Amino acid sequence: MADARIQIAPQVKRGDSFEVKIAIRHAMETGYRVDDVGKPIKRNVIRALVCKYNGTEALRVDMSSGFAANPLLQFWLVAGNSGEISFEWDDDAGTRYAERAAVTVAG
Amino acid sequence: MAPRPFSRLHRTACARPAFARLLATLALAALPAHADLLPAQISADSVPRPLTATPGDAAHGRALLLARENANCILCHAIPEARFSGNLAPPLDGVGARLSAAQLRLRVADNRQVHPSTIMPSYFRSEGLTGVAAQYRGKTVLTAQEVEDVVAYLQTLK
Amino acid sequence: MARGAAVSLAVARIGAALLAVACAVPATLAYAQSSTTRVIPLDQLKSGLAYTGEDVRALQADDFANPGMLWVERGEKIWNTPAGADGKSCASCHGDAKSSMKGVAARYPAIDAKSKQLLNIEARINASRSGDQKAPAFAPESEDMLAITAYVNMQSRGVPVGVSIDGAAREHFERGRAFYYTRRGQMNMSCATCHEQNFGKRLFAETISQGQPNDFPIYRLEWQTMGSLHRRLRACLYGVRAELLPVGSPELLDVELFLAWRAQGLKGEAPAVRR
Image (cartoon, rainbow over the protein chains, first blue to last red):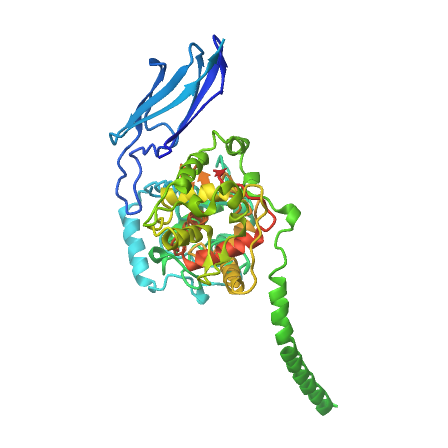
């Protein structure tokens, strides 16, 4: 439920670069912490995040315990065709996530 | 998600000669079980006699001032050499010249006896407090020896 | 002469005693009145934002970068999702939160008309959830509770805090006030020691704020997650080595009312970002 928010400009021009933002709700548990009774909290961080633009890999991020919780990624892509920006990621707990957003290219 | 505990810097272990430790143990055994200062120990605004037989260790005292647990003096006081410190309370630079060891001892142990409205915690007092967490109830923040160590360090700030 | 002096002294004593009796009632009233005089003047009230750095202020101001918005979005989904035996959502009765919830959180804690109890916004939401929706209550400090309060409280962004301390709320207010000014814990400090007498000064590298409640739930960078006002109060209790009162406990609820009264006029800021 609402594990991520994606932000892209409503319309972009072919050949122009445009900004893509994704904020992900994830504890990014480092594995170095203990709970209230001193028991170690198991590591659970996002392992890899892949962004595809119309099915072609555009960005791959190998994440680690050095990332803050609830990471925010911001990057630029060059507008080709209208279609879809999709994200997939998984974490140490083995949960797989996916989110997508439409991109409309003019010209 | 479990709350993130406060960062804990572990106190640097301080090696003491076994003989001194034995003396300290014997001295402690001779003291009453009551940990707080007794009225008889206080003279005007000072505690003239050391709380323990073992002289204070200034290096360990300095470590206590800097440690983020227990004494944590730099939370409020600036001391020379500490890169960061709070400014809720006066800087301690020169405090060893302004106050004697006996005066420092009472101020560290129970500053309320000198300044009744002070916001400074009493580091060697366990009574007269409200709503103390179970694990600290009936205990002083610093041990008698630690008070001596802190006083020894403060005396060097001249 | 000596006798006369003794008599006049006795008269003076009786007079003083009478005066004390005479003053007792007005003095109580005077105390009651003075306790509702603003502690910090309205034009000097500052939310915790004023005591953060530029980076934190920028993070809060950006509705995409503000991590609290992840909880707000989750809260919006909860608002619109049917739950419980009757299949009702919050929206079934309250419609669009943007209008129906505007300014609501700014009036809490408040005495609940039905139960006559003092409820904060969390307790009020749970009262609807178990009473009207017949759904399980949200656990204190759970992700869902933080999400729904982030969503509801956001609808009071920009709305001045304004709670009632009249009627049944008054005794809660007085208890909260007493708690606020009582030094406690092994470190022997009251809330006022730092947040009233010393705001603007530093504890180590942290600037002490006025301890205002207008911005909760907050995304606290130290926590790396969202947390309620009660969680924040517990962090202070932990710091002064005082007994940790549970989230939602009557004592913390009373303090919450006192804090909200103390913050009256300060505009809502949820979901805020703090160090």
